[in-house]
Image (tube, rainbow, N blue to C red; front, side):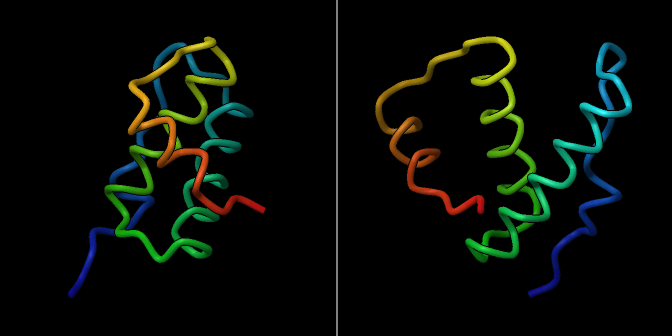
Length: 73
């Protein structure tokens, strides 16, 4: 199955610095590589993880478990 290219679907937010965007993009690539997720799912997971770190966002238990289970190193 073919997935859209990450660089085509990840978009820099208007209030996101270049440094923040590049960090989120790198995290997205890492999630794909280490977890073998499709690109759309990886973009979403990276966004949720960044929101947790930058904004203190919390999610339902099921989502938190998924995010905590992802390999990112």
